[in-house]
Image 1 (cartoon, rainbow, N blue to C red):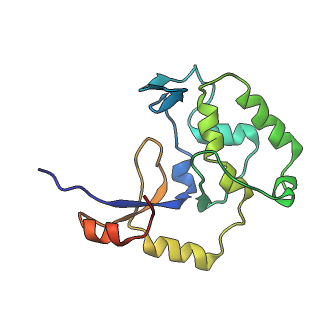
Image 2: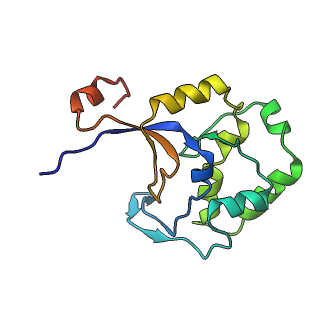
Length: 163
């Protein structure tokens, strides 16, 4: 029986790798009490994410981008106003194309990078020193900084990371 590898994913991703994100279907859709196992996206106009970022006039930090997967975040008025109205209009237009579109996943991976303060050099060095690898998973975690705990379940359980 293969041993399970315990991986901790960071809240930061290596920006050039994150920009490679692409996905043709989504595997966890919920409609009321019904869960759809896998749903293909409506035909997208742009892929990978890098092309969408360029089309939206979005400039993420060059090295590490903060992520908030799940689509929930809070921002201040200052964080909103420091970006152009044109950028927001571009994003809005791309997201009105329909339901179940890849653009919503691009936007989800963009919000924290847009609204967070850029990391200092010291903070980036600390993150790079702690991480083991950069995720090459072609799905949801592409580009995320990862820390492998190997098969050490005791070390994993000792981390107080909630339920």
